[in-house]
Length: 380
Ligand code: FAD
Image (cartoon, rainbow, N blue to C red; front, side, top):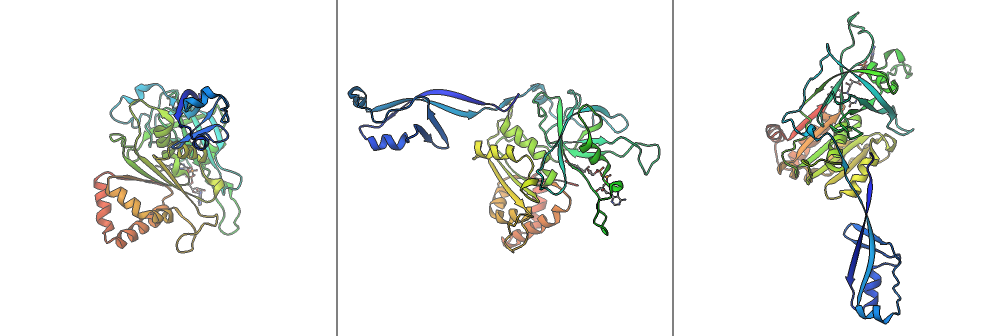
């Protein structure tokens, strides 16, 4: 099943009086018509220079129009909406679930530093999860620190909705960056020290078995009690994974009990354009849901400079919009942070500075946000 477009045929009549220039301005020369953000094209050519007396007397132009709009994708089984609480730790390290790799695709362009893969895993409906949760993966082989014992579990944020990329509740997707080790002295890659689990995942092939635990985590769950809430989502790199799930649920899937009418604002920090993740999906939401979605990118290695002339990091984008962000937070917005641990000090410094400039105490504000459950952090 794919994200499809439907055509709707409709008949439209516009009263123009006898004013030919108005007729021309509404129906441009190419027989298309625009209202708000939507445009229609006529399926039959409209003859604006009609000489028919009967037509001219009607002072009304009728045209048959076709509107192309995006439809949301149906998902099943809808019973996945029923539980009141999220599934937690259905499978533990000593009793993990054997799932199967469906696909592994490089998710970044050729000029991205490093490799990130989008990995779809088939759990056949046995490992349900909610958006914002993580799976644990136990890579095959022996734990070098505990001979005879399996490797420790590595956690990965789930990048799909509970219905998975095939909308049938049977798969989960991960967004995994291959951990590569470069010797600080020689600058050369040392494969013996490459990350075990991320390399296992990025090298796996369709049909390969994979040991999964979880799902785990509650801190990044989407608070669903208010469908009109504001969600400010801040990510570096693979930290975008949970937001892909949120945004699919908000804008791509037709979930009868979750009709999103709020604002989702994504700040994504990566190195360059080739490192952007899921950019086509996000760009489409911008086009289809301009009132409900905002998307700001910080490309640190692409020449864009922050206010102080330095590289543009995600905290600099936050600073650019700090007034709006603070107002939204004051009005109850949720703010999420996901990605590398290193992103937090810079962001916290920025927020603290902005708060002080506004004459507010950041410490007080932060404790209030935490108390109100508006503050969601998952960094690694
Ligand atoms: P490990 O084998 O654990 O190695 C860790 C690092 O040490 C690597 O960089 C490796 O190169 C280096 N290293 C190995 N040997 C040496 C040595 N002798 N000397 C110096 N360095 C060495 N990651 C994602 O990619 N996507 C996600 O969505 C994601 N979500 C996460 C969610 C949570 C809640 C958490 C806690 C973590 C998440 N992670 C995610 C990180 C992930 O769990 C792993 O930590 C990451 O993939 C690295 O694991 P690894 O097995 O590949 O590396």
